Amino acid sequence: MREVNYSGNLWSGVLFGLGAIAFFDEVVFHQLLRWHHFYDLATTDIGLISDGLFHAFSWFATIGGLFWFADLRRKKSLYLKRWWGGVLTGAGAFQLYDGLIQHKVMRIHQIRYVENVLVYDIIWNVTAALMIAAGVYLLYKTRSGNRRASGAV
Image (tube, rainbow, N blue to C red):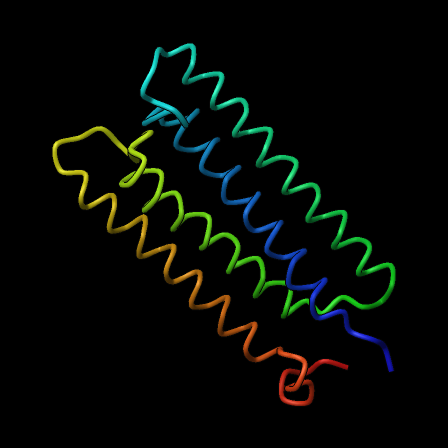
């Protein structure tokens, strides 16, 4: 019987999810659509530099999560369902933090500069909440006291 690393699977997934959603945000909304920069309260040059730093952060988090994933797999302690719970929770938490704190509290940027941004905010934050709910559900189903029901071996 293999030993499942519950904490490692959770945090590897959270780190990967956080980095992957930040990477997606940077590539799609910052670069391809050019809806905003990470920091829009200064010049365009500062906005581009802030995007670069944000991109570096997302890349390091994604790669760090994948190195941890590889280590769990090498040690035969990977629990994929729990890892996915961490991915969804991390991605949703980052997106909700971005939507509430950075967009509304700090006001360093908003998702899009249009007349009715409320629609974009609702879609952004509801998507984040759904990812968190799905992730927490998977984490609950795979908690250490629930090994038999969750399918862990």
